[in-house]
Amino acid sequence: MAWKTLDDLDLAGKCVLTRVDINVPVENGRVTDTTRIDRIRPTIADILAGGGTPVLLAHFGRPKGQVVPEMSLGLIKDAVAARLDANIIFGEDCIGAPAKTAVGSAQPGEVVLLENTRFHAEETQNDAKFAASLAALGEVYVNDAFSAAHRAHASTEAIARLLPSAAGRLMQAELEALEAALGNPIRPVVAVVGGAKVSTKLDLLANLIRKVDTLVIGGGMANTFLAAKGLEIGTSLAEREMTDKASEIIKTAGEVACDIVLPNDIVVAREFAEGADSEVLLAEECPVDAMILDAGPKTVEVVKSSFDAAKTVIWNGPLGAFEISPFDAATNAAARHAAELSAKGHLTSVAGGGDTVAALNKAGVADDFTYVSTAGGAFLEWMEGKTLPGVAALETT
Ligand code: 3PG
Ligand code: MG
Image (cartoon, rainbow, N blue to C red; front, side, top):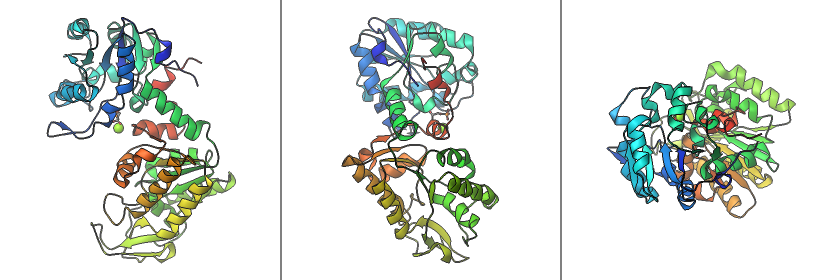
């Protein structure tokens, strides 16, 4: 896998079409988490330093080919300007006259932001003509949107084939981290997979057991595996119709010598509420009227020792119901241990996907992980071993 980077492009005096993912959460008109904007700063800075004008292409929400005012990037342009510390010229459309005027009026040092690409149905159709209209606005293309790279859209895929193209700094960092975690990792490798549902992560589990040495299964998913082993799981969240699939995964893991770690002790409660009365039991002891909400302390010790023995940890999903205490204890303790080992240089730790970043932030350890991905769905698809169209379009070999 090889791709060009910003260092391979001549940027001086060029309009640099730059696909970014600034699909940030907004509440009451305010951006509540600027991480995705912050993470494109190195790319924007390098384009400006190289004498180019960054012309940002981005989606915002899922407007399904319609102009939806609540999904206008104009709503977040001030937040983008503030976080990038640059003057933003906003184009009211991403193609045609409004886009050309915005691009044409940018002064050196300014950044152009064009309206939501998904206001055009052709974007998600990966339409060649639409991609050509985007490409006509610049001379080179940079993709810095790893978190949208699982979409074969005009601004992530078709356009890369029309212009000299390269990965931006964030795309580059994401790809390097993922390569270090699963592509060509230093062994032993431990994967932690949590979250609610086995059904959404079947492909991921099937791929991981062939690639990692130890697979830790946590969260609601673990309950389905415990049920598959014939254990009582009371009123726990689980997908009982998936127990056959879970058994298959356990069987295949045995054949390919991947150790599966499931909770051997559990934290149970009668209600799912902050500070609910809870007790620690052995995995075999779940009462019929109780639900499993976290892994117990013995399990945490097993997970921690697997990290001690590992050189690489890849993490997706919490080990318990981390949103409310005390059911965040296993996630917090295990994440803290991975962070400490990483900070000491003993471990390469890479985390991403959905709730994972929220869980690590809540545990206060995200900064000490070797790498925390900005991606949700793209991270999962990559963990499933799928080719990401936005990455494939950048590949040079
Ligand atoms: C995300 O928020 O996960 C990315 O921006 C991709 O968005 P999408 O799932 O709407 O394609
Ligand atoms: Mg998504």
